[in-house]
Image (cartoon, rainbow, N blue to C red):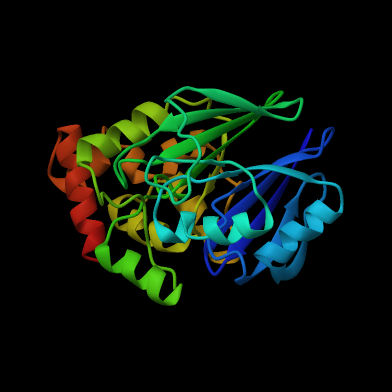
Length: 287
């Protein structure tokens, strides 16, 4: 059994995952830990509390949680930028890509470790957004969740240069899905559709940012499929979508994971998977 504490930071997400039996926990991407945000505890009965991220973690630790690791999905400042500040309060190892600030260990692709008695974590290398991008699959019995950083968002991936600069400078949200900062369309196809797409369909998706409304705004220009319309409806009435959709859902409503779909191919004018990915990226960047 586990508890998941989501710490939104102006459309950025950090996550505190705890093994309920041992109280061992990890914090994922605690960038800007002093920043104001909302803590959402997702367990049997979701609840929320207002406060800054670092005090929210302190409250959990004061309540008996044993913080064992900081985990980073990649080295960008809005994910790993809080490492040094976190270490002032918690002298614990940092697991992340080789370029993450203060990193202690970089897991090999497929390498695993455990949190407490019940949670198994597997590292999934997904180079493209950055070459040190790593997603993490968490398994607790029959429950599965994948923390995807900036590789996979609900209904899309990160794309435009302007989006990244705006996020860092003002913390405003725009549309996204793992922009190829350091990689290629072929690498993103592998990351999304071969690595993440190979996970069990019931794996819940926890991205690094809340970009669903922007993603679906683009998706409906590509396809008017029923899954995309359902995502559009959900996004219009929910501010947060993390953990509400699965890998199976993404295969249905995320156009970047539907490169062989005739409708998507017609939109791009291409049939080769890599060409389709490239054209989708260009189109989304232009929005």
